[in-house]
Amino acid sequence: MEADNSLIATIRDELKLVQRVLIISHIRPDGDAIGSLIGLGKALMDAGKQVEMVISDGVPTNFRFLSGSELVHKKPHGEFDYRIVVDASEVPRVGSALDRQPGVDLNIDHHITNTNFGRNNLVLTDAAATAEILARYIPSLLSITISPDVANALLTGMITDTIGFRTGSVTSGVLRVAAMLLEHGADLSQVYYKGLVQHPFPAIRYWGAGLGRMQSEPGIVWTTLSLKDRAAVGYGGRDDADLINVLSSIENMDIALIFIEQPSGRVKISWRVCGQSNVDTDVSQIAQQFGGGGHRAAAGAEVDGGIEEVEKNVLNATRSYLSVLLGEPVSLEH
Ligand SMILES: [Mn+2]
Image 1: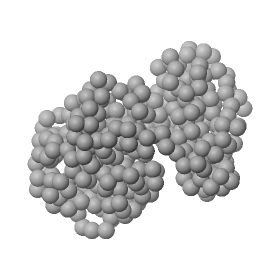
Image 2: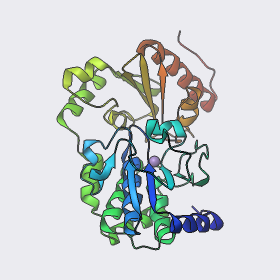
Image 3: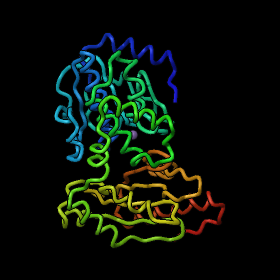
């Protein structure tokens, strides 16, 4: 994982001159969005900059243990001379946070689907997390030492995007960067437990609703989560509460997917390559057919339509994708 030297030099020179920096990450933030935002935000503060951190949806409760999370706003308030977007593959992913802001000066990301929307684009698609890119380059970009708060935030991004260092994106280099963050004061067991393991009671009851109607066929396992399910258990999120991690742990499966009903007739879809899959699966290719994106091992999309109709269409596309990969004749259900 290596960025172009002249790009790093350009960014370093620009950051030296700026005073008021806006940093934004994506809606429905995951641990990498939050960890990258807070890690870079606190590092810029350590370098003497005025910083505002913005995520349209705010910080989910499980990441509020991070020092600096209390400084994250839902929209920009001040005036800025530099705008940075982290962990977002395209501008619409940041929601309304960039409204009335004249363009992105620096785009830092690792998504293979990144559209290079920034004036500068530090996009390294072989990085396991945006937080890994930041951990590698913050010391040279800002001429600072990584503080314990910055280390904790960046380790959160790395641990969550690699699901605890167990995805195919984890290399010896990724573990070396994580070890460096521990040397700078990151608390591995706290970050691991709070960022990955711990769930609220209603979330696990919500899993129960999804697990109860889980279905499978050769290679594919899936389920649905409805608005009713969330109301019944009092789960406040609009996501799958990480249930996809359970589905993708089922043996002899290649692809897990979850359909999550959203307000106003939309359905969010989450794909995950199962841990034991032997096929060279890239679920972001299926997600892109539905206007979504993501990574080889984990991808998502959100589409208009009723949950049953979306389930049928998306399952068929997933079947077709897998059949082509396996070199089998395509048989679709109608
Ligand atoms: Mn990420």
